[in-house]
Amino acid sequence: MTWKPSRTRLAMAATLFGAALTMAGCTTTAPVGAKAEIRETIRVVVGTDLIGARGATARDQRKIDITVAGLCGAGVWTRSECARYDAAKSRGGW
Image (cartoon, rainbow, N blue to C red; front, side):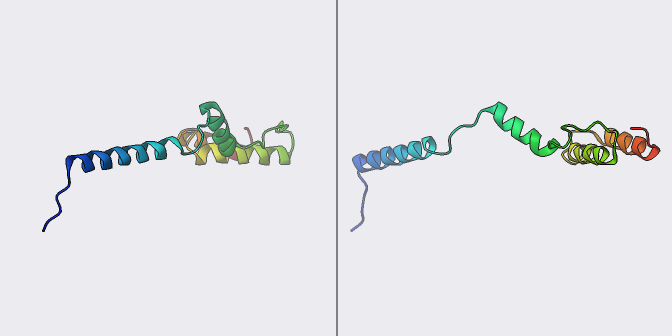
């Protein structure tokens, strides 16, 4: 004897499956505003080292170098921009 599903059972299973997918889709993580997400991403890439740096001391220059490293590493600056920074820094004129 073989089991043959009825149309009613198939419809019920499809309905329950759809309801389960809908519930799973609607109960994931809370949405995050795009501005907040972008701001956090930029803070991670650029950092906050430039705050208060004026470039007048070696400590200030290190802060600038850390920021540039983040910009170059994340691909925010192009390779040519990073190379220009490195060249200017090696000449002592950035």
